[in-house]
Each structure stands twice: as structure tokens, then as C-alpha cells.
Image 1 (tube, rainbow, N blue to C red):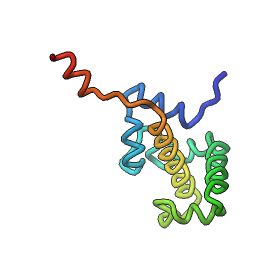
Image 2 (tube, one colour):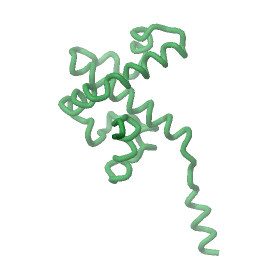
Image 3 (cartoon, rainbow, N blue to C red):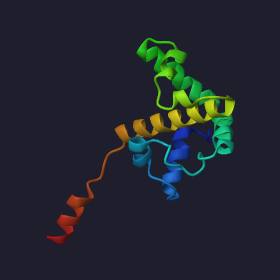
Image 4 (spheres, helix red, strand yellow):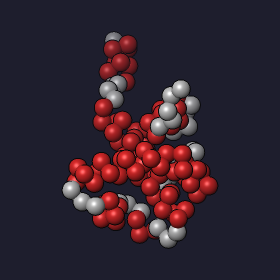
Length: 121
């Protein structure tokens, strides 16, 4: 059985045509990402992936040399945390955005313009 991860969520969403990982990597989640748009969805996603999210936070804090709360205070959206649900939403969007950026950094890009011009020549 394969462990459900944030990367798998992103890969499945792109495969289904729900969203593009590149859009999330560039623009974040605030524009709406199917499956993690409402607080009900992000809270359920957080509960399912909280160990992975906290591992990401820990690794990031170790890399940066700062505490997790200090780092989170600098993340986009931190000023809008006002309760547990908004905190979970904040962490889910951060983790999904970071994972999308990591995927974009390692997945080879296809230059479709070159393929099109080669086929037309």
C-alpha cells in the first residue's frame, strides 16, 4: 500500500486536470485548489498529512537555523491566523505550495514551442 503524500495529491490533481502544479508553485493556493479550498477540506487534509507537514517544518527550521514559530511568522498569510482552523489552513497551503515548488524544481520541463516548430518545418 502506498502512503498518501502531498506529492501524490499534487500529481493526482494534475493528472485529473483539476489544476497544474506549476500554477500552484508560481501563484500559491489562495486562488483556489480543488480539494483544499474550504476550511473543511484543509482541516481534513491537515489531519491526514500533519506528520508530513510538521516534518517539512522541522526540516525547514533546521536548514534555516530558526525555530518553527519564528519561521512561520514570516510565511505569507501568517497574519490571518485567528483560530485552529485558520492555522491548519495556513499550514496546508504552505506545505502544498512548497511541495509544488520542489516538484517544479526537479521535474524536467518540456519546451512545446520547439516541438511545434520542428513538426511544422
